[in-house]
Length: 263
Image (cartoon, rainbow, N blue to C red; front, side, top):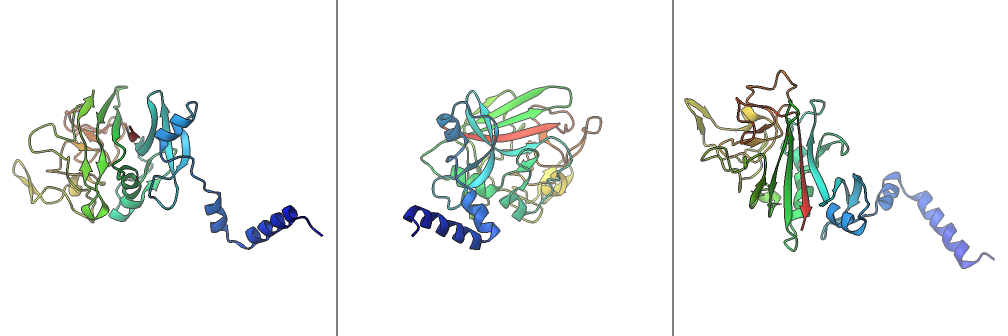
């Protein structure tokens, strides 16, 4: 007669043999923490890489790239470094995410909302920028969060600090993107009705800026447009723009990274 332990092991093996591949993979996905900040706090020597997280109130865990720095663990939700991955995507793709977590990607508005909706935590948004001449700059915002999908994932940022300038609030008056919903080519939530630039009238910012972003009168910040290589990165309406840092006519950046940390 088999022992109870052997019987339980055989029963488990039988059950697993009858499950589908998707169920096995789901069973194998075990949360490593609620967010990258918490993972770093528990394991100070944790290295940067892909981790599985499950924010409070979220039913299914999901993978993110954690940038582990001396000041804590940061959850990366946007990375640009070339033109291999197109960011000209529709609403559903920006909501759900696309790309490769270890390379260029957009994590997804749904996941960023899931992270930031818990008001028990406050979040810092950090935006890292690289130009084509070897220069770097950053912008950091306190009290970052996104609104619900029904409110078009409205952007909320607090106090700014950094070296890149506060492009979200605008290089000039009337360009404040804070408090606006996300727009894509098939879902217009910008502040244009229409926007007026000199003698040019424009109804949708995605028409010239492309990609998806929190547009307001189009604005001074837009990091999801077309990527342009060195020597071909000046003068494009669509590009990776942060006009409080690179105000020349307009300048498309070489690389960007957006990430958040809980405090």
